[in-house]
Length: 148
Image 1 (cartoon, rainbow, N blue to C red):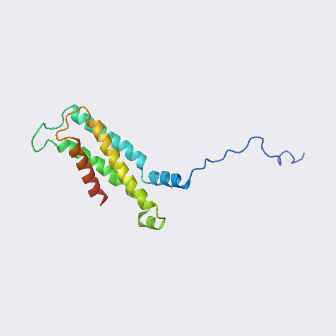
Image 2 (image 1 turned 90 degrees about the horizontal axis):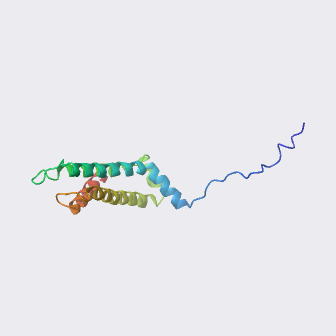
Image 3 (image 1 turned 90 degrees about the vertical axis):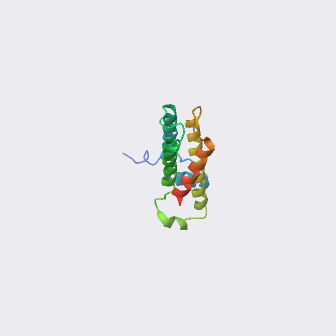
Protein backbone atom coordinates (compact mmCIF):
# COMPACT_ATOMS: atom_id res chain seq x y z
CA UNK A 1 0.00 0.00 0.00
CA UNK A 2 1.38 3.39 -0.98
CA UNK A 3 0.47 6.99 -0.24
CA UNK A 4 0.72 8.05 -3.88
CA UNK A 5 -3.05 8.42 -4.23
CA UNK A 6 -3.17 10.72 -1.24
CA UNK A 7 -0.61 13.13 -2.70
CA UNK A 8 -2.56 13.74 -5.92
CA UNK A 9 -4.37 17.07 -6.17
CA UNK A 10 -8.16 16.86 -6.27
CA UNK A 11 -9.78 16.78 -9.71
CA UNK A 12 -12.34 19.44 -8.82
CA UNK A 13 -10.91 22.84 -7.86
CA UNK A 14 -11.75 24.05 -4.41
CA UNK A 15 -14.53 26.61 -4.25
CA UNK A 16 -13.17 30.06 -3.59
CA UNK A 17 -14.96 32.71 -1.65
CA UNK A 18 -16.45 35.60 -3.58
CA UNK A 19 -14.30 38.66 -3.57
CA UNK A 20 -16.08 41.94 -2.96
CA UNK A 21 -14.49 45.36 -2.81
CA UNK A 22 -13.63 46.46 0.70
CA UNK A 23 -16.17 49.29 0.68
CA UNK A 24 -19.09 47.02 -0.08
CA UNK A 25 -17.99 44.50 2.52
CA UNK A 26 -17.52 47.23 5.15
CA UNK A 27 -20.96 48.66 4.37
CA UNK A 28 -22.62 45.24 4.59
CA UNK A 29 -20.92 44.42 7.89
CA UNK A 30 -21.83 47.84 9.27
CA UNK A 31 -25.49 47.38 8.32
CA UNK A 32 -25.58 43.90 9.82
CA UNK A 33 -24.05 45.02 13.14
CA UNK A 34 -26.62 47.81 13.30
CA UNK A 35 -29.45 45.29 12.77
CA UNK A 36 -30.69 47.21 9.72
CA UNK A 37 -32.39 44.21 8.04
CA UNK A 38 -34.54 43.68 11.14
CA UNK A 39 -35.13 47.43 11.29
CA UNK A 40 -36.44 47.42 7.73
CA UNK A 41 -38.92 44.70 8.67
CA UNK A 42 -40.00 46.70 11.72
CA UNK A 43 -40.50 49.81 9.56
CA UNK A 44 -42.62 47.79 7.15
CA UNK A 45 -44.70 46.62 10.13
CA UNK A 46 -45.17 50.27 11.18
CA UNK A 47 -46.40 51.07 7.66
CA UNK A 48 -48.83 48.16 7.78
CA UNK A 49 -50.02 49.25 11.22
CA UNK A 50 -50.65 52.79 9.94
CA UNK A 51 -52.56 51.31 7.03
CA UNK A 52 -54.73 49.27 9.41
CA UNK A 53 -55.28 52.26 11.71
CA UNK A 54 -56.46 54.44 8.85
CA UNK A 55 -58.51 51.73 7.17
CA UNK A 56 -60.42 50.72 10.28
CA UNK A 57 -60.77 54.32 11.53
CA UNK A 58 -58.84 54.03 14.78
CA UNK A 59 -58.31 57.80 14.65
CA UNK A 60 -60.52 60.79 15.28
CA UNK A 61 -61.65 62.77 12.24
CA UNK A 62 -60.87 66.18 13.71
CA UNK A 63 -59.97 67.89 16.93
CA UNK A 64 -56.91 67.82 19.13
CA UNK A 65 -56.64 64.01 19.07
CA UNK A 66 -56.83 63.59 15.28
CA UNK A 67 -53.09 62.92 14.96
CA UNK A 68 -52.65 60.87 18.12
CA UNK A 69 -52.65 57.34 16.63
CA UNK A 70 -50.56 58.23 13.54
CA UNK A 71 -48.11 60.07 15.83
CA UNK A 72 -47.69 56.98 18.02
CA UNK A 73 -46.95 54.87 14.93
CA UNK A 74 -44.51 57.51 13.63
CA UNK A 75 -42.78 57.54 17.02
CA UNK A 76 -42.46 53.76 16.80
CA UNK A 77 -40.79 54.08 13.40
CA UNK A 78 -38.44 56.73 14.76
CA UNK A 79 -37.62 54.50 17.74
CA UNK A 80 -36.65 51.71 15.34
CA UNK A 81 -34.26 54.08 13.57
CA UNK A 82 -32.76 55.25 16.87
CA UNK A 83 -32.23 51.66 18.01
CA UNK A 84 -30.46 50.72 14.77
CA UNK A 85 -28.10 53.67 15.22
CA UNK A 86 -26.73 52.14 18.41
CA UNK A 87 -23.42 50.40 17.90
CA UNK A 88 -22.57 47.23 19.79
CA UNK A 89 -18.98 48.38 20.31
CA UNK A 90 -19.58 51.82 21.77
CA UNK A 91 -16.95 54.53 21.59
CA UNK A 92 -14.14 52.20 20.52
CA UNK A 93 -15.61 52.43 17.03
CA UNK A 94 -14.23 55.96 16.62
CA UNK A 95 -10.71 54.62 16.22
CA UNK A 96 -11.60 52.20 13.42
CA UNK A 97 -11.42 54.49 10.45
CA UNK A 98 -12.63 57.54 8.67
CA UNK A 99 -15.57 55.97 6.83
CA UNK A 100 -17.68 54.89 9.80
CA UNK A 101 -19.08 58.35 10.63
CA UNK A 102 -20.28 58.60 7.03
CA UNK A 103 -21.79 55.13 7.23
CA UNK A 104 -23.60 56.10 10.44
CA UNK A 105 -24.98 59.23 8.80
CA UNK A 106 -26.05 57.42 5.65
CA UNK A 107 -27.67 54.65 7.68
CA UNK A 108 -29.71 57.12 9.73
CA UNK A 109 -30.71 59.22 6.71
CA UNK A 110 -31.49 56.16 4.61
CA UNK A 111 -33.63 54.56 7.28
CA UNK A 112 -35.45 57.85 7.89
CA UNK A 113 -36.22 58.15 4.18
CA UNK A 114 -37.33 54.54 4.06
CA UNK A 115 -39.56 55.04 7.11
CA UNK A 116 -41.21 58.06 5.50
CA UNK A 117 -41.71 56.14 2.25
CA UNK A 118 -43.19 53.09 3.99
CA UNK A 119 -45.49 55.20 6.17
CA UNK A 120 -46.65 57.17 3.14
CA UNK A 121 -47.22 53.90 1.33
CA UNK A 122 -49.28 52.74 4.31
CA UNK A 123 -51.30 55.94 4.22
CA UNK A 124 -51.87 55.82 0.44
CA UNK A 125 -55.52 55.92 -0.48
CA UNK A 126 -56.60 56.67 3.08
CA UNK A 127 -57.44 59.96 4.73
CA UNK A 128 -54.46 61.07 6.77
CA UNK A 129 -55.75 64.11 8.64
CA UNK A 130 -52.97 66.60 8.04
CA UNK A 131 -51.21 64.98 5.10
CA UNK A 132 -47.91 63.39 4.36
CA UNK A 133 -45.85 66.54 4.91
CA UNK A 134 -46.81 66.52 8.57
CA UNK A 135 -46.03 62.80 8.67
CA UNK A 136 -42.57 63.49 7.22
CA UNK A 137 -41.94 66.34 9.63
CA UNK A 138 -42.93 64.20 12.60
CA UNK A 139 -40.76 61.25 11.59
CA UNK A 140 -37.72 63.46 10.94
CA UNK A 141 -38.19 65.37 14.20
CA UNK A 142 -38.73 62.35 16.42
CA UNK A 143 -35.84 60.51 14.75
CA UNK A 144 -33.59 63.50 15.43
CA UNK A 145 -34.59 63.46 19.09
CA UNK A 146 -33.97 59.72 19.27
CA UNK A 147 -30.53 60.07 17.71
CA UNK A 148 -29.53 62.77 20.18
